[in-house]
Each structure stands twice: as C-alpha cells, then as structure tokens.
Image 1 (cartoon, one colour):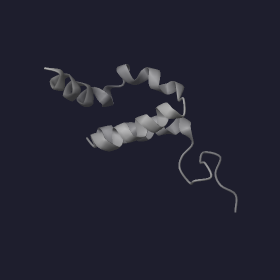
Image 2 (cartoon, helix red, strand yellow):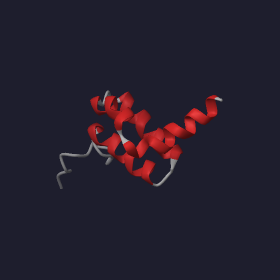
Image 3 (tube, rainbow, N blue to C red):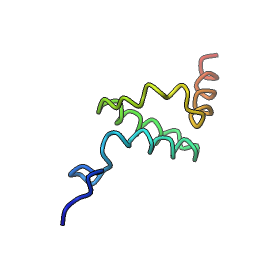
Image 4 (tube, one colour):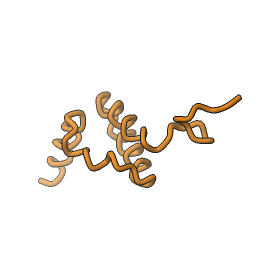
Amino acid sequence: MREPASSTTSGRPAGRYWSHIAKIYAAMDDVEKVFMWLETSYKEGNPDLIKLNSEPVFGGIRAESQGLEN
C-alpha cells in the first residue's frame, strides 16, 4: 500500500504541515505540544514560521510568554 504524499515514512505529516498542527494545539491551549510541533517545524526549515507573529491563534501564547519576562 502506498503512503499519502503528505506524510513521511514515519507516518508523521510532511514538514510543511507541522506548523498547522501547532496551530491546532494552540487553539486547544496545549502549550507544550505547540512548542513541540513548532520546534519540529523549525528543525525541518519550514518557511511558514515567519508568519507566527501575525497568527492570532498564537496570541495567548505570546501574552503568556510576555508575562514571564516581568
């Protein structure tokens, strides 16, 4: 059986979709999984990461991290 084009041989989604998975976890407020998927996306060189500052779904995480700086 042939694997879908959007997955790797490990059964995980291809790199360009990892930041989208992080968005889903951000909407569920699962910060640990958000950073896990963003780190994976970063390691794979996903160009979509440049858009993170403009993604509203990550607003809660940005606000939370700003509170840690004070």
